[in-house]
Image 1: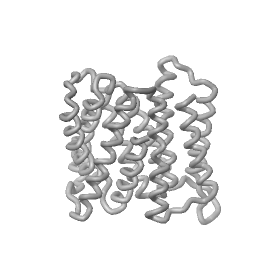
Image 2: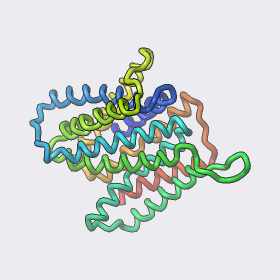
Image 3: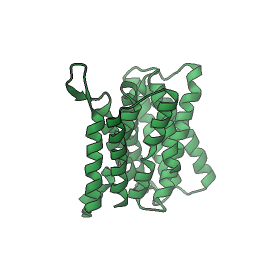
Image 4: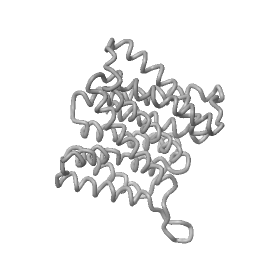
Length: 271
């Protein structure tokens, strides 16, 4: 739950920043700030380095989470946070699919949860244009990409945290920061931001890293499915902040769709 709170606040701030700066700039600076924080945690924890073989899944998960964040922040810049955030909460379906590939067949409750998540996504993704026709809501496709990236992050961080939660998060962030910097250089996006934006970007990195730490620690104490769904409740925080700060409003159908998607995610993990 602490992870959900951290991600919810961090994603809201990242979404706000991405409406003023390039997404790559937001990611590079915030991820770098988070990297400093996570290595301070590693030093304080005193954990011995478990070896590359043990933490490489976490590093891979960090790269995929970066892709998910990039998609999410861009989606926030294009569409309403109240629509985009709940779609990205479909991430727990990915650990479920991985379990199924390993021979664990979903039970009835989990199938119902998957159906609810997909139904909620459809409701949130469709909207009526001015001519009365239905179209895909702005940012919906990117939100699905974000869900996939976050879901694979859960799988990777769960595997890496078995030996050391602190080093798993450090590996994830160490792998993601260079990718963000390279993306900025290739796209010729400036790696600097106005001074007034720096506190916001640092806060994004700290909240995101703090959430990653909580989630990694949680996977060592409970089932990754339960951890995935509880931490995937972060859209509630993002939606509330978007309502309070930005004045975003959703119609009745969209609110129902968001509730259905989140309820489905809960069934997927607890089934």
